[in-house]
Image 1 (cartoon, rainbow, N blue to C red):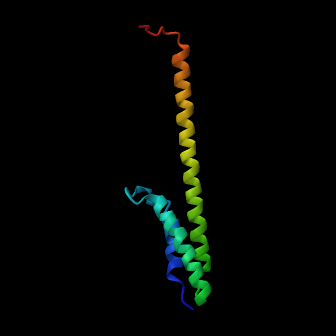
Image 2: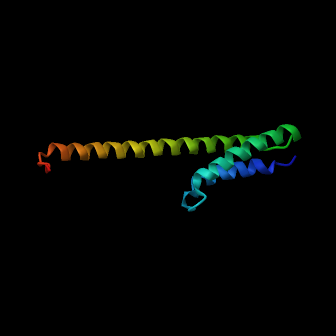
Length: 103
C-alpha cells in the first residue's frame, strides 16, 4: 500500500519549520502552518483511500502546533523582558533625583 504524499509533506514541513527561520520572507511559522494544514488534509485522504501514513500526518500536525506554541511563548517572553527592562530603566531614572527642568 502506498504512503500518502501529503502526510510526508506534513511530516517534513513540521520538522523543517524549526530550521526555516533563516528564510527571510517565508519563515518557520509559515512552514508550521503548512505542516498543520497538509496534515489535516492528509488525514482526510487517508481515511477515504486507506493509504498509509497516518502517523506522519499526525506527527506533522503535532510538531506544527508545538512550533506555533513555542513561538507564542517566546514572543510573550520577549515582550515581558522589554516591559521589565523598561520599568527598571524608568525606575532608575526617576529615582536618581536629577532635577527636571521647569519652564
